[in-house]
Length: 336
Image 1 (spheres, rainbow, N blue to C red):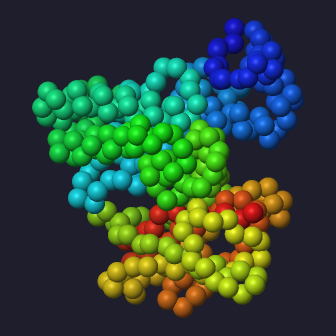
Image 2 (cartoon, rainbow, N blue to C red):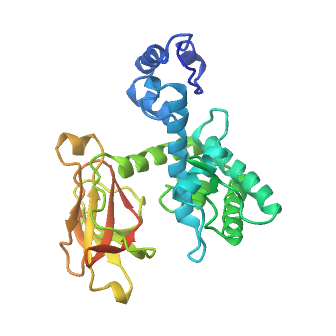
Image 3 (tube, rainbow, N blue to C red):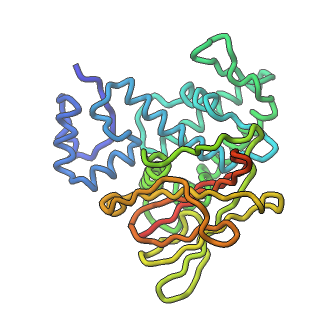
C-alpha cells in the first residue's frame, strides 16, 4: 500500500488525485498542468524533487533537509560575530524535533519551524541552563553542551525578531528580504510563498548541483576569515553598474568583474574562485562549470561574462600554506 503524500492542490487538479499510487496520480497531475506549472506547484509546497518515488519516511526526511538548508541560511545571515548559534547537526536536530506535523506551503512551513523552535527553546531557557538537544546516535550526549546559555538566548532573540517582522509586516517579498537577507529579491508583487519558493529552489539548485566541486583545501581550525565579493557589471551600452548578490537581473552579453574585498592582512593570499552555472542553456552548451579557478584580474579578482540564462553563483576562497583561511558567501548573479 502506498504511503500518503500530502500537498495542497486546487479543485481541477484535485480531481486527478485519487486513491492511486503517487507515481500514478503525480503523472496525471503533471500532464494536466504542464511542466512549468507542475514545478511551481511542488516548489510552493516545499516538496522534494521526485517525492512521488519516495516512501513517506524518506519524504519527511527530505523535507526536513530542505528546511534545514533554509534555517542554516537564516542563521548565517543573522548570527552575531561574537555569538555561537547552534549549527550543523545540533541545528538539524533542533529542526527535526520542532518540525510541524502538517504539510504547508513553504512560507507556512518556514514560519512554523521558527515558531516551534522559539517556543521550545524559550521554555527550556526559562528553566535555566543550556537546553538539551539529544544526540540520536548517543542518547546520553547533549549536542548543545558546547554552547552557552547566552548563545541560546541570543539565538532565540534572533528568531523572535524575525518572527516579529513577519507578524507585523506580513509575508511578502520585503519582509522575507529582511528575514533572509539581501539575496532574497524585492520589488515583486508575487505572493510571499511563491516568491520564497522560487528563490529557495533557485538558490538551492546553485548550491547543491552535483557538478559543484567541494573545496580541496582544509579549513583552518579557527573560524575562516571573511571576504566580501562585489560585482561590477558592464552592459552592452558601455555603462557599468555595481550590483548586489541576487540583485537586478542582467542580460546576456554583459562583462562582470568580481572583486574580493579583504582586510590588509589577507591582501597577499592566493584567491581561488568557484564558478557554478545552472540552467538548461548552460547544460545544453556543456558548460555547467563548478570547479575552482585562478584569478584572472589584477588584485585577485575574476572576470566573467553573462552567456547563459539562469541563477549562477561565484565564491572566493583565500589560500595560505595549502589551507583555506578566508572565504566569501556565495554571490548570485541572475541572467535573463
